[in-house]
Amino acid sequence: MNSIHLSIKNNWIRSKRWSAGLLVILLLVFCLPLSGQVTAPADSLKADSLSSSRRKSLKPGEDINRQYDVADLIRKLIHPKNKPDSLRKRSGITPMPNVAYNPSIGAQIGIKAVAGRVLGHNPNTLMSVAATSASITTKGIVYFYLSHNVFTPGNKWNLQGSLVAARTVTPDFGLGIGQAAGESEEDKILSNPERTPRVLRAQYYILREKVYKQIQDNLFIGAGVSFDIRKSIKERRKEGERTPFDIYSHRYGFDRSDYTSNGFLFNVQYTSRDNQNRAYRGVHADIGLRTNQTWMGSSKNAMQITTDFRKYWSLSRRNPEHVLAFWNWGAYQLSGVLPYLELPGTGRDPNGRSGRGYTVTYFKGPQYFYSELEYRFPITRNKFLSGVSFFNIQTANDRLGTKLFEKWQPAGGAGLRILFNKATRTNLCVDYAFGKYGARGLFLGLNEAF
Image 1: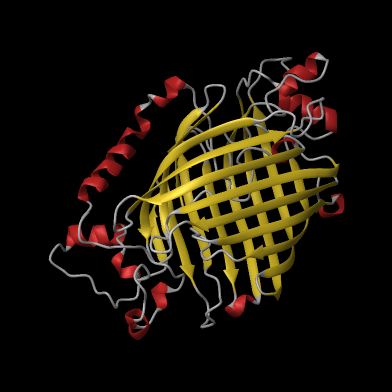
Image 2: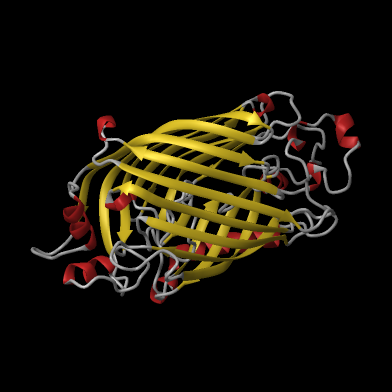
């Protein structure tokens, strides 16, 4: 479960629950063969399926076998005398224990598999990726998901979808961007300018599928459906106590224990990035319209526009892993009303990776705007270790007087990347991020945040 974030107070940072993870990382660093391994990283999506004759014609920096990943490390530890087979086709499937930690979820244990493959023989076909995971955490979260992003040969069709079944524990910090708003006592509780935390527990189910058709190179139009269901929502509170969730649900007519958010999806997508897991160059843009309908079982009607724009600049031809990456994600309610837990906000992007430095839904509102800039760079010559530094900002309205773009909240940090599978550019990500209100934490995940 890559997408759940949580802010953490200073005394939580001293917790020993993630010290073991840091020890593992240090051991991996000291096990690295730092000399004589490589001069540059792979520069092709399809390096795992190249023929031997094609490999001979590769330019410096394109040979994937000169990179070093976790499988190579394990092989060297188990069979130290065996030489690697440079012609052996690498598997695009990466199974692994799903061990992670961040303050949102606590310590997590489970199993996970990530797959990447180019379908067909068309050289212009983008890599298809899929992932599945089952896990449990020390905070009582049970999570299962299955997701896919498939490109058929020649990119004629693109299928994107996910299936989620979970028992969730969601931190709640109120509505808006952390600014006192409104005039009544209820409004002050709802905006929660002190960011006093509360917790909401629920059962959560998602079924989402979109189908895109390519209408010209890199440009797709698509449509789909999404069913988002929350049941058995519970919040601990004293008798007669008012909370943001309680006030919002009463104000907009939602059941406090169960709701559904079902609707149609219509999207236009442009994508030219060279890899879905870890792009060196290219653009990805997606504009979507979601319309929730009561006749589909939705608790309320609502219409919402979402925007997702990502741009990648490779700063070195010889070493393409030097990358400057930009991301903007936004969601804007046009009409109707959304359930409280479905409002866009921190960590509510499709992959749940926005807003490192804060908890999931730390800031949220009917309209939400987020931007992030990240610099990515290799550390070791064999590309086993890489690093990143990042900065992000976010803003939201609250329907209580604070408008979009009126108040901004920043966060930033740095991280380490460990190459898990060089055939698919799959990375293990370890980030430390911090924001305002004493929010900070260590975040572990798989693949880049965007």
